[in-house]
Image (tube, rainbow, N blue to C red; front, side, top):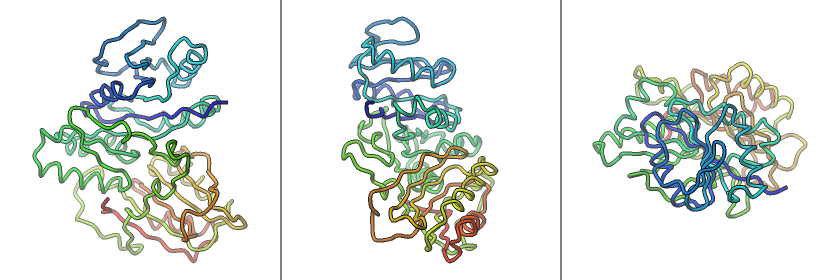
Length: 351
């Protein structure tokens, strides 16, 4: 079996510049398969070199464009089979462009729970475009926009050349509060270094290594005492209900207790649990385990070959909506037998 091909999910609210970014990536990332939703509002603007049978088109640079027909899984399977048969170029990566109002979670769920797909593809990262001109109002009015920001691995701030400087600064601060771990990159006319959207997950294909600390970015979740989260006065905005915080547990954790706590969160509080990442120290195991989840979707755990640093505490980072950080910390501590642990929380984290 070949090494699973990386998939990038490109999302962002309506009019935020996804397709402009996508057009640039197609020109600069050869041998890429582009999957566009059937409700995609803008077509790729470069010349199609050859029409093909079915919902595919061959693009310049050895790229393939494919319309998502029904479920995502059959589309990925059809692409893979056509690649294996030599009917299309042997693409090396996939970019999925979601619609502007799409919830990214079902796509992630599909990628992780279809065993056939998971054996051949891997999620490399979620990229979200944010409109510098209208981003503030979209975050105010549409929770979908807030959610797209919260689950992103990287944020692309578009149209900064059209927005007043003070608006861009305020939007950057707001995005950093919603998702402290996501780097923010200004993009003009869709132009971006392709390397900026690759190797965003736990696995780095270039170095052939697991880079857990780069992925976790715990330092960006500035600690504060539990129950004293502080922060600026809240206003009536969607994202004032979002909190980004860390939980640190000193004692080794009971595996089954941890599974029970996470199952409780993902089963009964999935809508509130936007995203979490963790490196954990389990009882009776010498090596750490990395965990990752988005709402009800739990990624397969990854056991590291060694601790990434001298700190062997269990470290979690959460982004939640309408969920008390103290409740989450107590749930983890009580179920895992790590009551001696401590919680750090932050609602105003800065990158």
